[in-house]
Each structure stands twice: as structure tokens, then as C-alpha cells.
Image 1 (cartoon, rainbow, N blue to C red):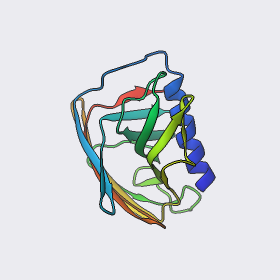
Image 2 (image 1 turned 120 degrees about the horizontal axis):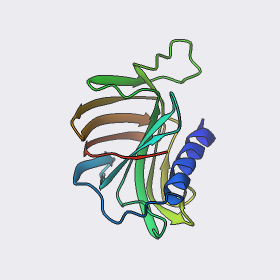
Image 3 (image 1 turned 180 degrees about the horizontal axis):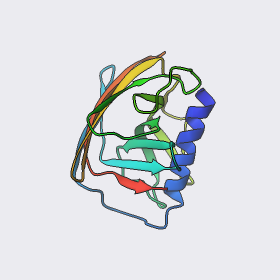
Length: 170
């Protein structure tokens, strides 16, 4: 599961780095995530659509681009559907009770990891993976997407909120 979560975020960030649109500004947003005594302000939100039933939502403290250099903090999760008004609970996709309209299958976070050659280096900074439980609540009002989330990892609990636009990427 750890390799899968890291692999998904690496693919997400790789597609970001390979995007033809090198955006230097991001839509106005309000968001952050916290763990222990640390809070990260999230400035950008991304919806990665890898095909039917394969979505990833990622929030970052910087705008991702081809030319980005430095540290990145981000949080993300994988789900199959995005239904306004829905609260999703964590459940492994390999579980018979998994319901794509009520569950999400993974979550992960990176804190102050190096961005190297268009990808996040999960060996630097702090990595959260191996989710054991959690919830994501989603609502949409026009172009504004609102998420409230809480994830429990073996190393601690991470909570957050995001209100703003999502940049769609494939």
C-alpha cells in the first residue's frame, strides 16, 4: 500500500511536471492541513482524472509547474466518484464492502519534501502514508470545491480543509 500511495503521488506529480500549461498563478483559495503542531497553507488544488473511476485530489502549498524548484508540502487522496454533499470514508478498494459512491481508497501527504526534476522526493522531508482510517466531505458551489478531511496514519492524524477552484489535469 505504501508503494502504491507513493507511486500514485509520483505519477500525479509527474503528469503535473509534464503538463503543457506552465501556470504561474493559481486561483484564489483558502485551505490548510495540520498535523501535530504544524500547519501548512494550501495554495493550489488539482483534480487528476486518470479515467473512469480513477480520480486523485491533491492540495499543495505551491503552484506546481515544469520549472518548480525547492520544497513541496502536499496532501492527496484517491477516490472513484466526486459527489457534492457526500462524506466518504476510507476503505481499501480490495475490500468487498467498498462502495465507490461512499468510500475513498487511499490518502497520503508530504511535508517539505524536495521537488527534483518534476517529481517529489519522498525520501526527503516527512511522508505520511499507510492510512488506517479517515473521512472526506465534499461540496461544490459553482466553480468552488470545498473539502474537509481527516486522515489517521500510523504516525499521527492529519486534518485539513480546502475551498477554491480545482485545476483539472489528466
